[in-house]
Length: 145
Image (cartoon, rainbow, N blue to C red; front, side):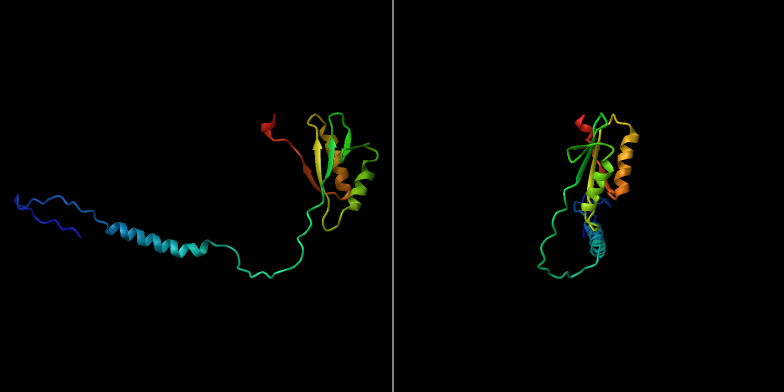
């Protein structure tokens, strides 16, 4: 601790204190240390679980998604094969029947931006009717323009 003693040069004048008082700094640091020590265990979430070991193989990757595309002329393509609108429900029903009930097929739907909204919705309705409900609409990013 630093003490201000009267100097011998003047009557009652005090000399400037040249030492830094670190006591408040140490007090603040100790309080922050205690706060972090108390709150750090509370930040971990979840329940600790000791999982059992298994010799089972890893699951196979999901099956390849079905590609459905509609071009600017209104032609429909299923996996790069042109399909007429009249047989589209039958083709989609075959694909849905070939899928697994626990792991249904994923469908990637690509449609030209010049198409009528009703055409796209008609194809999506057919997909929904046959049970292919995992439909992803494929787009291009805005930086590709």
